[in-house]
Length: 278
Image (cartoon, rainbow, N blue to C red; front, side, top):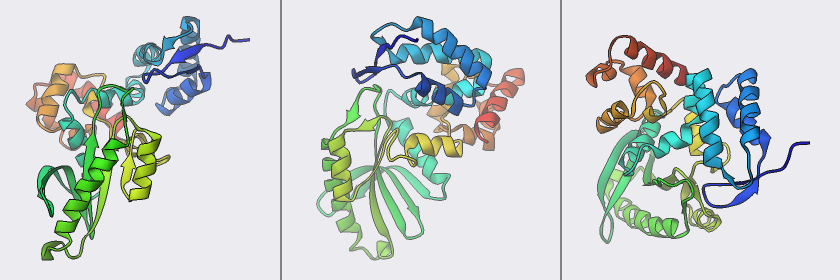
């Protein structure tokens, strides 16, 4: 019988190690049954009480990267989003690109006049008669959650903007929706307030089936920071040019040449990009 080990999550919470969760996350990355078994067999002997989920992830990622690069890239999604930092600006562009790929007209980092004051809105996305006013809460620490103060604050800002825009003729046919998107999680109070106040909340794993993780995985919207064939210096160059999605590279491969990627290196990166953007 396998010993039951206690592991420590990024938030500091402790829980019992669940082998099936690790197996499922590896399978969802596209790892073969053989590779999943190989990784599990190497992880189990390393477990000690109190071991961090970060150490488990790092070991699993290292083994998977040797076996299948595109699977490793998918498996690293949460960390890849963290690597968009240290500022939240690239994350805002990521969310903007996700909405653009769904047919929205998108503006990032806009100063918008409210009824009382001006507000900076991270993403304004418009499609048909819908306009989303999106606040992006980016955290470098997976253990940092967006608490109830976040939707409380954003709700008042969104209402101020809607009150102003609803009275203007150029916006008379639009319905406005406030959104908050975070790369980590919301506290229970934050979720409860968002539901009650009519704010749309999206986090790493909320709402179930329509979370940030779900949206990226279902549509192949992987950030360039997930690429295993590209060094950090090149990823930073892409981010500086507002290239945040692998899909943008797939649509315009010449973007890689602009940052100095050529020859066999170019082919390897494009092969990985095409595997991720199916």
